[in-house]
Image (cartoon, rainbow over the protein chains, first blue to last red):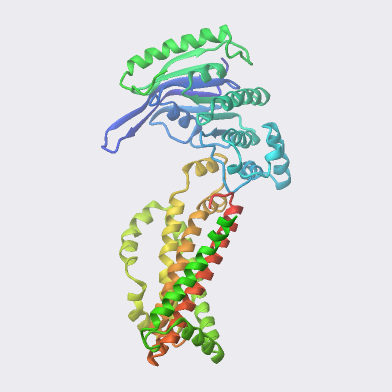
Length: 263
Length: 252
């Protein structure tokens, strides 16, 4: 691996609970992510995957250790590293175009240039017909496509996605997974994708980082050496899926207190 | 079809019923004590013919508008500021909690001492009545902004000024609108109180003045007028809200 795009050196995160106790949200993590890679972070709740992505995206600060992107320590959020949230974060008082324009205006583009670029990215996610619609007129899947268009429009080098398809039905989710892969292959940003869905992680990721709770930590990193597009029901994917599921069961047994996780 | 027509007729039926009951009840008392609807209708005409009615309405509306606008001008910026500053909010909260339950009418003696008789004390009381609903709803609207809106704005590198104008204000807007609507009601209710106590004109004064002459028919005409104007203002506010709500993408 050449110089990594994202590098975590013993990055950890503690909170103090309301009772004043020190809670370890994330035990020290070492991880390197290459430029243009698609990495999935997967694990049960409490495994620190959201904490980890927030540290990388600059929404939270490490208690100890370092997070660097392009060799520079992450000090806060960066318009070059865009996060996509499960609840879309669209502005309901702005149209689809207005939402995408918001990002471009924040970047400092001139109005005419911004409109051209926004239109281009709205077309890229297939929502040209809904340019003038408001978010409440769109389905969940369409809203997330708007959020993706808004993120890609500023041409970030890193795209963070925090359970982006968690609130969508199975069919919409599969469709958007393929859409995301298509956009990733076209624009080639580095992608860090958080999910609690093992299937989703195996289907999307070039690497899957399996995390475990109590305290949140990296359990295992699995390379998925398969080209995209992948066949969801194919044997080659099944091999990796089995490996991940077996590993996950181990995690599950360790954290047997968390009965909410049933596969 | 028949059902929808009768549904629309329902308010009219109850209104007619109310007037009938009123007319019937009034027949047991002398008109000086309990005027019938017919007598009140005549009083309306009398007041209108004398010309005083219109000037009273004009004065009342002018006071109401002045005080309401002044309340908005002070309360919204203060609310936006406090909504964004947990520390200041924490500091000022006990003060607001103590001052708010004091009825604006209780301020009246001080208001007269400070501002004398005339427009000023009435405006001051209406101002107080409108101020707190707008302030409190603005604060809670700002506090209630989904954090993801601000995260997104910061992530894209929006400048603080742009975040304030393009995210915080529009996001808080529907909540502020609720406060504005409530404030219209409380302000209009206190208009009458303010004018009954310190003023020499306006609808509230008209009622007090009529009492001094034992003109119960004028009193009731004044009361009805206050109710009707309140209704019109409220309806106008609701229309404005619906229109803005549509523009705001159906959130309001």
